[in-house]
Structure formats: structure tokens, C-alpha cells
Length: 436
Image (cartoon, rainbow, N blue to C red):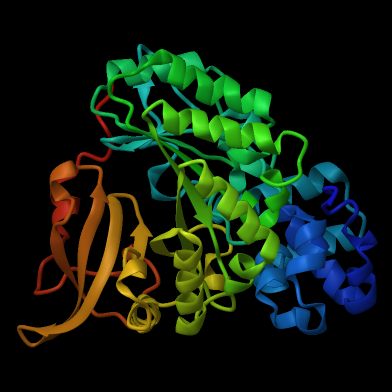
């Protein structure tokens, strides 16, 4: 299959759009697509979406902007500007103001995770957890298609002030040499797998050639498996990509492919399964993760089937996340109580091999917070929570409690239990990794 992308400029040339969507529905895509990035491809359109029921199809909702993803006021502001043919500059200013209301950099990504080193702010690196550094290669800051829930949507809108990216792999290597506590490097984006083999070898090969004694694992965060499996099957450099994966493994560095599966329909596709098997055959581990989202996968049966199928192929279920507090969060939001219920019911229906999955987890400012239980303690109904990861390593694994709030969808919606005024991490927290 030859790759073809659709954006706001040409999405109406998709035959299914012409056949199934009304003019009002197309207009809604145009409006929301001005604010949140929109890109889909022919594999998603032709292979993953059920167009006979597109209004409720999870893959359609996952890739095509919906009217309700903006507030009514913001939707009308953009819509009116488009309909009256407002100047481009005016539309851009309306859009810019809306974007900044959507919390473009949640969990302190911009001001707490980006290290300064030798007097230079490393805008293509995030260092939130002691052992792990995130690297944003400049050539990997797009995707084969965009998820409408994506918490990294500012990477795709062309605003340099909001974008993480770095071309100089040498700076990354120097930073790792100076920080021997770092054992893992996560290539992220965007999607690193949009890069051709020359670019991949430039970044990953340089890391291997540096022979860093502290480097134990290279991770690649990617949606390519389900948005373009031919990256590992028939693309012109597919075999070379897999050979690079083998090179990483043979060097003694673990390669973890962090695959994003949002629905069973993705992992069930035969070409996706072929691609998965080819990646696993290189010696790489494939770990799977996704947020739980209303209208997409807020059903225990979907997660149960995903985890079962993933284990059958050889993947390791890793995380069930809570949709982050950015972008179209309100559209996808599942309450923390419902997320816990979905996780438990799915967890109870799989074997031990799938119970490696952790969740539901919020990647919040102080760290990754897991919802463990809803309990009655000291006469109070509470959420039992713990840190899976934290900016302060000593907090990892630490248990704490919040008042039960049936409407809470994020950590910031919670209050401390048992009459306390603040959570312990609010009193003790250094908010960023110390770097020099």
C-alpha cells in the first residue's frame, strides 16, 4: 500500500467523506481542525474505520475532529470567522487564544521538565524522572496520523514557542555522560518512526557508538504500528529499520518499542499483527499502552480483548492511562472512579501474563499517580493512590489518600483526605530535576 495523507486541505477528497458526511459535519471538521491538528491516512480511512456507523466508530472519533472537542463559545468564534471569510491573520489570532486555553503543556512539560545544562536550555530533552530522559529528534515531530486526544498536539501546529525538538544528538550524548543516573532514553515526538533509516541511524547509531556505560535501554514511543504498519513490512527501508533494531539488541542495550493501541480493532488487523511479529523477532520488547477514553475504549471488554490479543502475539501490556488535562480532555474524559472500574473488570478477565498492565495512571505534574482503590477509612470515603514514578525518587511507591469525588477526572480535581489541607507532595516537592 502506498501512503497517502489527508489534512484540512484535502480531506474532502476522501470518497467516504463525500458519501457519508453532511456539509454540517464537514464544516465541524474544518472548524475544529483549525485549532487541534488534523491528519489521517489511507490505511486508517480504508482499513480501520467502519463507515456504516462512523458517528460512533472509535477509529473515526480517534482521528477526525468533532464539534464537541471545543467549547460552544470557541467553536462559534472560529466557525463565524471562517463563514464570513475573515482574514487569515484574524483567524490565526482567534485560534491562538483558544489553544492557550487548552493547556498546551500539561504536567510541567515546558517549565519543569526541560533541563538547563552548561547554560543552555535543552529544548529537545525532557528529564522528569531520574533514570529516564525523553529525546525529541527534530525530524520525528510529526505522525502518520494524529490522535484527536493527543497530549502532544502542540508539536504539530507550527508554533515554535510550544514545540519540543532538537537536532543535535551530540548534546544528548554529552548530557547522558554528565548524568550517569540516567539509564533509559525514550525517543518520542511526534513519532520517531516517521523518520527514514538514515535519520534513525543518525540518532540511534550515535547513541550506540558512544558506548555510554550508563545506557541500559532505548525506548521508541510510536503509533506507527497501527497507523502505518507498512513501516515495518513494505516501506522501502522496512528491512533496514528492523536491522537497526537488531543492532541495538545485539549491542547489549535493551530495545523497548512502546506501542499505542487504543482499541481492539487496531491490534486485530492482520497487517498490524505481521508488523508486530517482525519487530518482536528482532529481539525488541513491545510494551503496549493507551489512555482510557469515553467513546473510544470505555468498556472493560475492549481492554480485555486488547490485552489478550497483545499477549498472544508476544507483547507486554504496560499502562492504562487517564486522558491528560489538555486539548480535548472534556470530550474524552472518564471519571477516575469509572476508569478504576473499567481497569478492574478487564484485569479480572485476563490471565497473569496480561496482568503486567498498570493503571489507571495519571501522568501529572508530581509524577505518575495510580488509582488503587476506593475505600472507607476512618469514616470517610477515599481514593487510595500511589506514585508509580515521581520527580522525587523516594516518593515512588508511596501511598496517599484523597477525598472521594465521583466527578473527578484528574489529580487536580482531588482534595486531601482526613482533614489535611495539602497533599504531602505539595508541601515537600522540588518541582524539577536538579541539573547543572
